[in-house]
Structure formats: C-alpha cells, structure tokens
Length: 180
Image 1 (tube, rainbow, N blue to C red):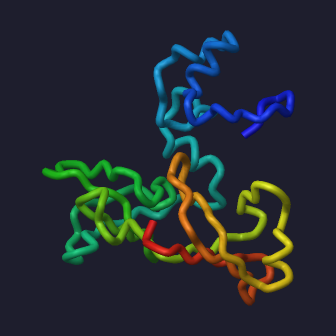
Image 2 (image 1 turned 90 degrees about the horizontal axis):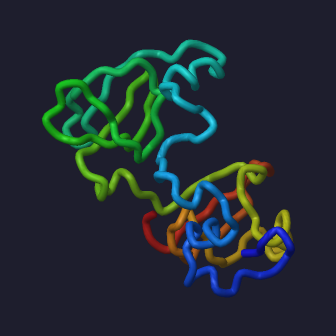
Image 3 (image 1 turned 30 degrees about the horizontal axis):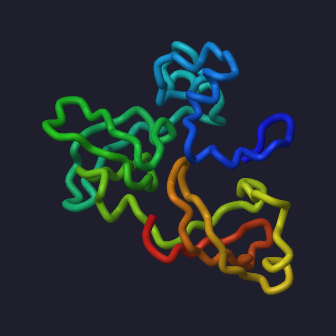
C-alpha cells in the first residue's frame, strides 16, 4: 500500500488505520466506527436504495434454506445483501441472508458459519474486479487462466485461487482453493 506521496507503507501491518489517521491529524481518527454506508447519511437504507432501482422492489418471503419453511416476510429482496443479518419481525433467533431467489424469495440461514454462505467459485465482470497492478495481467491474457492470491472480502486474508477468462469475454471466474 502507498500513501498519497507514492511512498510505500512497509510498516502498515504494524500500524492501524486509526494510528495513521491520528498522526495525520484527521478528525475521523477518534470517531465511532460505522458499519453502514457512509454516503447515505441518516436515512434508512431501504428507502435510499429504492430511489435508484428501475422498478419497485417486490415483496416476498424469507425462506429457511435448511427446511424450506417460510420464516418471515420482507418488502423487497433488493434491500438485502448476502451475508447480511436479516431483521425478521418476531423471529426468536438471528437469521442471515444466504441467497436471493426468484419472485422476491430471500433464503436465510441461522448461523454466520452456515455452508450456504460460502462458495468455491465466483464469477465477476472484469470491470468490477480490482486488479492491484494493472488491468488484465499478461499471464491471464496469454494462457486464459492463472494461479494467484486474492481477497474476496475486505480485511480477509489472501487466499490461493485460479482466475480464468470465461466464454463471456467480459467476465472472469475465480476458483478458490477452499470455500470463502
């Protein structure tokens, strides 16, 4: 990682971002941490995102991925992200979004370590993939696949994977050596 002057942060693994912000005199160094979307402000996410959808979200059911039972109702699957906690009215346990289906169906599981939250493969549009050093690495262009390390989520450790060009030229497939 580099700072704005192009100097490499060799010691970044020993420093926290808060320490760096404090040394730089940034007011955010002591602010409370937020897990929300910072640019939305003090608004409800569902109301915010609905403004940008091409059509109104379709209400549907929360379905237990293990039993197939309906465990609740929601106002639109577009309001949810896989892995997010599902706020199901009247639920006696915590639920997590694990898959979005057709007709507004949202599948949920009851653990953050449930197998349905993990996958061995991911297909993404090339333009949505963050290449660290360049656009498409030459080995990928020349050989149509390459072994490398990647990070599927923010702050996750780097893990071995094989990235391959797909039949659809605008996409790549990432096959992880273990579920992530």
